[in-house]
Length: 116
Picture 1: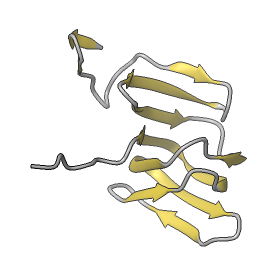
Picture 2: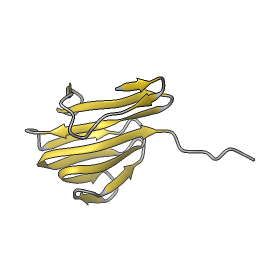
Picture 3: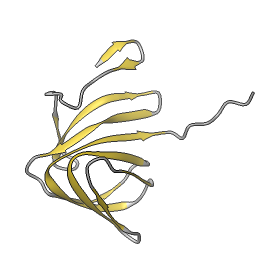
Picture 4: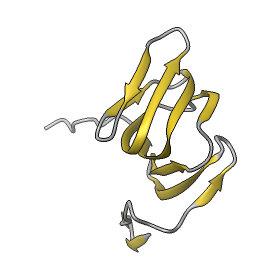
């Protein structure tokens, strides 16, 4: 929810979820502006997702449940509540979730320090 121009606030306890046809769960978008896309996904009855190719670098924080993420040509990640991962653009992934599963996700640009 945009509370002031450019300022977005929400809660992990939100009831505002929309279907995410791309992966089969639900999502709650916090912000999609200025090169950033952030929100949460939850899965209540879909435990296996993929293969899914990441359209941009994705960083996740597991909030509930657990995820085993198989990365084609790479490692398999085992993530629990409180753990984070960042996956590169173009990675083909298959997700196996312990339900209910909820994550916070971010797609965005790298932070660049301004020259002084």
